[in-house]
Image 1 (spheres, rainbow, N blue to C red):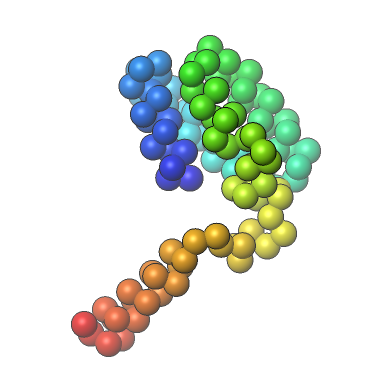
Image 2: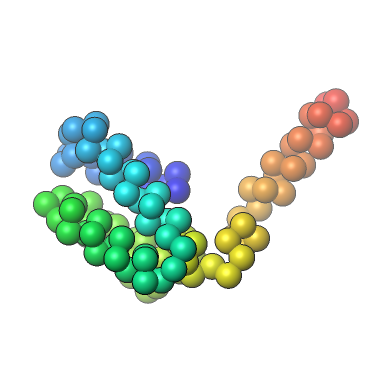
Amino acid sequence: MQKIREHVVRQGSSTMDNKTLQNQVMKDLKVLVHSETPILFSQVLSAFLSKCSEFTSFIQYFKRNYLDNNWYKHWCRAFQSNYDTNMETNNYVESWHNQLKTIYLKR
């Protein structure tokens, strides 16, 4: 989600100057990410794309980096069987290790 947020803000510098609009786009993207069924995802995605259709550079970027080649199956809850257990990075392990060192081992 953080990468999407960074790109929305980056794209916003040229086309979405309104901070309120940027916040609304982020809210819509969060709803998209947390869609629980493929049908709901399709509906929310269609609404999002039509709502943001005037921001062509952002939509092209979003489609290229987050929708093409079924990439949405990696970040949308609807396509993940165990949403909280299908981690593709080791951030949770690193966080746990850091807590172990700082809290329990007092380093």
